[in-house]
Structure formats: structure tokens, C-alpha cells
Image (cartoon, rainbow, N blue to C red; front, side):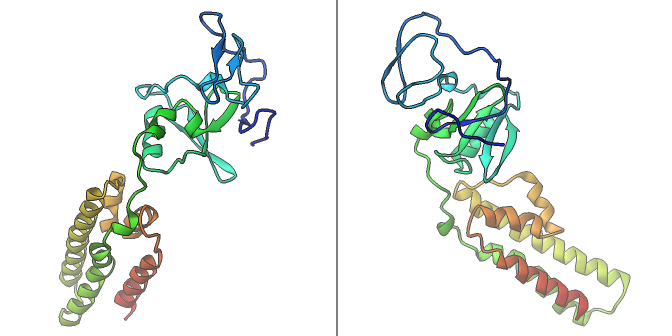
Length: 233
């Protein structure tokens, strides 16, 4: 999908090879925004550093079109709106050297040198994963299953008993999920609303939560073991 071109630091993307180059409005010489070298009017890129001028304008975050992409390992993700791309950069999903491009671009370029360059002038701080406490998260993963297992010892095997156990599990899961989610929000770490489905199937919450914090996916194994013990004891 990607192939390196003649421009240093740029990666060509598959677009119409006959697309017309961008032109200056005033027809005068201008300076490269990256290295300051003087470039002629109508130039698409800088001969000195390879900067692509087609993307030097500021990104329109109000544009609702999903036309932006970013490189992810050997593939890409997108399309996204400009606003979503800005959000991904602010939460450090997209880093300064991540290659980005939009529909119609001839070259992909580093996010810090793209239309989103101003975002990287802000005080972007990586999510303080090490400062996030896992107390509520561990409780979410373990306590509902443990308490239900204890209660099942005192309840007879019947439909009403199963309803009671299910209700206890859901209520406890919802309480600890909410407390843990609030802990994340206090550290400016946001998760999508769908994670509330985790009160029924915990990994739906656990996977994205761990992905933005400690990445200790062994907690999922803990939850799975407790569920197996509960159901097959």
C-alpha cells in the first residue's frame, strides 16, 4: 500500500496521478514553513527538505467529511473527520511522526508536519496511565463473580435464585464500572459510551480501558477464571 517517493520524509498514497498541483494565489515566491527555504510560486514541495505544501493549510475541524487517514503498522485506519483526527492526536493515539493524509493527497506526511501541526504546539501530555488506580477496576473484574458464587451456596437452584444472582452481578458491575470510569475521567482519559455493555460482558469494558492505561490484560484472564469457577464449580 505504501511506497517511498523522492520526497524525503514523505510516503506516496494511491491517488489519481493526473491530479493538478496546487498553485499560489499571489504568484510570488514563498518560504517553506518547515525549513524556511525560498521556493518558487506553484511549487508542490520543497526541494531542500521535501515538505509538501498541499497540506500546509490549517485543518478545518468543522468539516464533517470522513476523508482523513493515518498509518497503523503496515496498514491504515480511516476515514475519519478532521475533528476525530485532532482528538486522536490529543490523546496520543496519533503521534508526531505518524503518517497522515486525506483523500486527494499525493503524499502522506508526519502528523506534526501536516495540516494538524498546530495541535502539536499545544501542551499535549500522554495519558497518565501509571497514575490511574486499579482498585475499582479490580473490584469490577472480581467482586461481582465472587459475591455471586458465595450467594449461590446459600440459595437453592431455582429460577428466582438465578434472577437474584444475575441482578446482583449486574448492579455490582455497574457500580464499579462507573467508579472506575470516573477515575479515568479525572485523569482526562475518555472511553466510548459503548463500554457500558461491560456490565453484561466485562471484556467489552476491560479491553479499551486497559489499552489506554496499564495494558495488564491478565485482568481479563482473572475475570474469565472467576466466571468459569462460578458456573462450573
